[in-house]
Amino acid sequence: LHAGTQFGAIQPTILRYGSKLQILCRSRQRALVQSFSSDEGRTWSKLTKTNLPNPNSGIDAVSLRDGRGLLVYNHTLRGRSPLNVAVSSDGVSWQSAAVLENQPGEYSYPAVIQSADGLVHITYTWKRERIKYVVLDPKKLMPGEPVSDR
Image (cartoon, rainbow, N blue to C red; front, side, top):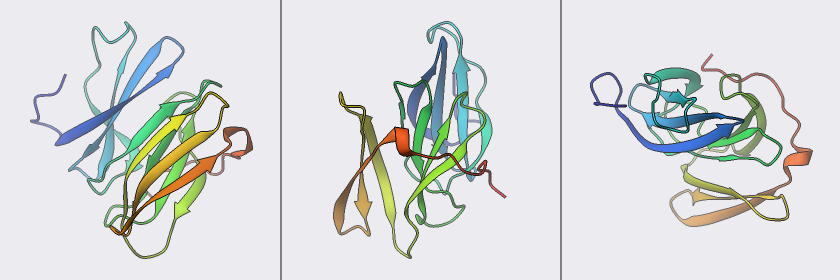
């Protein structure tokens, strides 16, 4: 899937949209990169850049029960602020859903799950001093504008 010649991509997270799988990875190319599989991961498309920026910072994502993907990432080309949540129904078009942090500082290494009660639980490092914990109700996330690197 990845020989490291085109993208400096690491730390994949996997999402499912019906019968399609997607991996999203952080990269050294200032963008999240992706690959898709339509055969349960036996074969994958070539890695390509998404329209989401990435400052070579860790990401995490979860496939929600309602079929959407939810991504936690730094929507910037430099630094590790802001820390954002985006949602997608197909893995290609992402909409802004929440801003977890937007003040100066480092907000990084998110981890996200959806619990049995349907709530989304997110942890991340807060200014390299603490671990912050946030709970979101995905039913209340109102997708906003499409997100891109512009």
